[in-house]
Length: 296
Image (cartoon, rainbow, N blue to C red; front, side, top):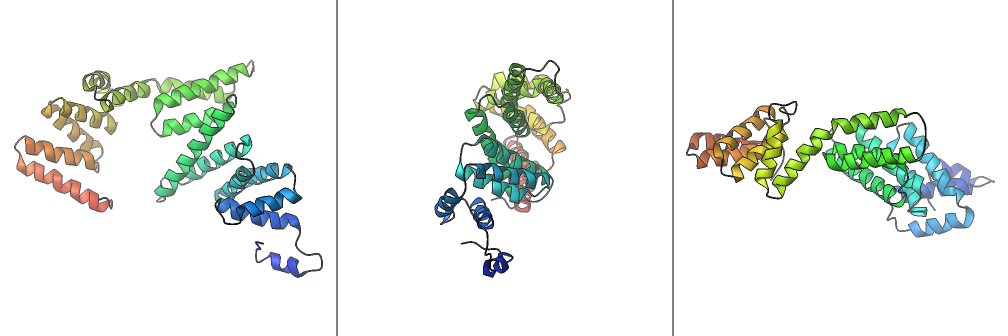
């Protein structure tokens, strides 16, 4: 049986430690470690003494902790609820939102590994929620943001359009602030979706098609976006337009001086063009950046 230090006094008292406190201790352990050795025994114990309302209690505890900004404790309650019912809608959605709020709170910090894990968990559980509960509009609302933040603009557009479709089906004469917000977001995604389409052409080896799309954004409001110039430079290089590629990679470095891949590409290109001095300069810079970022 799991005990907190504060439980010991109650345990040795005449009344003893109540079952609710014991169950809460079990919940915290198996929610923190879903593969805990005695997890199944804990679940069986709770099934003997508590009914199906226990899941709702755990979810409510998770919501309460989330409101207080106690993300770890909130996740623990949602994860424990999912162990009792892996397809409970509110547990799945609550856990996804908790992970999302947690990683947003870490923005700009040093815990990038944790941020990546939380982003993946949030997206996975929002996807599961939308697949199992296809008419649950809230899942599409937040999932669209996750996709947009990951640069998956086509997915974000599709997901947010699904959100609008569901909200329309669910009624309401006046548009809610959320609906108006998503309409504006979709309008702002029109160009990023086209840019993503161009990048996908490049990834698939359709360099001419990709260039046709991406070149239209040079000199536009997206001209300061280094990935645009990096993808263009890569396409130029693949098509043998080395001077254009050189200009593109230099544009990337002007915007993002620490971009390792562009430095490496510049080192190789200058070598091909017979400029050993510049080739050595960028090769050494790429090597230095890798050391600074602890990369192999």
